Image 1 (spheres, helix red, strand yellow):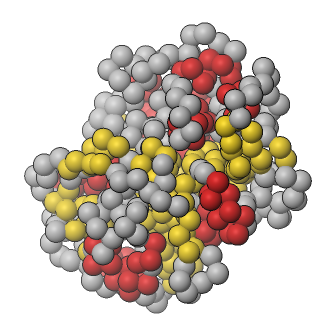
Image 2 (image 1 turned 45 degrees about the vertical axis):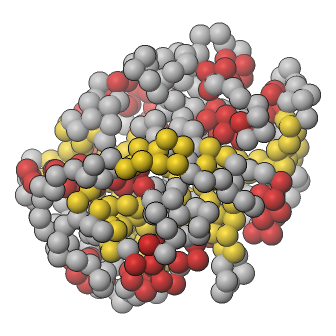
Length: 448
């Protein structure tokens, strides 16, 4: 599985304006090797991110993960279609807009529909797993030997997100390994490239709680279908395992502190133990100039994660307690710095035995998140543990959040014209929930 070289450029470092990154109890208790000097932050502007012959293409609307996934996989076979063309054909429409990641984007575009990629409409054959079953490690390795696959995760509130897996890296000390992923979200027209453990491929990460469907053996035949069933491709007829738990809502008071008394290995040890996940083939798209930079990267302060689930957003009514919608994750993001600059991140999940590393990368997202956090800390001067990342998975939205004496607030990480939000704008959580509630009622829970 060879990987083409990824080309990228680095923007000039932004001015550091905050201090005290590493004062959280979690960092002081768990993250041996944390530095007392806050890092400078830069963001990565990717001109091309290519993994095993597949180029990362971001989804152009919050609903079009299926179109972006199909676009990436079909382009690897030299079938080049725009997402608007894919959406028009699958939805039987003619007005799905192109260029939604340009200055000509419509704030309220038509065709905001969820869906599954219907490869057979575009001259491809494929197989699929039954809902809830992930390919086994050996199946996944064999499938990726034939080309990229599409796979999907369930969020706790019945939403679904679909992405592309491009490569598998075996663990030299274990029976499985890691999976290289191209994710068309978040909704910032940038997408993200990550490497995750196979366990997380099966169970989900970043707020997702279980597997949905895998589409594999996707081969260009040139024979197109005029209509597709709800789940296209040939069912492989293998029954899924019992479903996983969907988690529980936690109070915001637990932010960044839950599990802080646990005995966990240092981040430095985790980076060394998992260094096999970063290879010469995937290092650049994960944010590193060379693979060996990962093992020596310096961890910055962890960022807690929360999510809002679709089904609860659909039940929300004006005046309800918005804090009750927040679901705390037992996984936290740890930005990684090289030469004093944020270059990548890892996701650490708390378990009874300590912390485990489940994901590497998301360089674009963590660069943007760290820059906003650094600037916000310079103006708010809040206590450690007041800041967090909030994901609204069904709409592929990420915000930087914080809590002060007056309430919970969210800062936009990029322009969101359909919500009338500008990059860096700070609004109450209540305002974002009130704006999203009507859209949630129209959301059918399909892949977005």
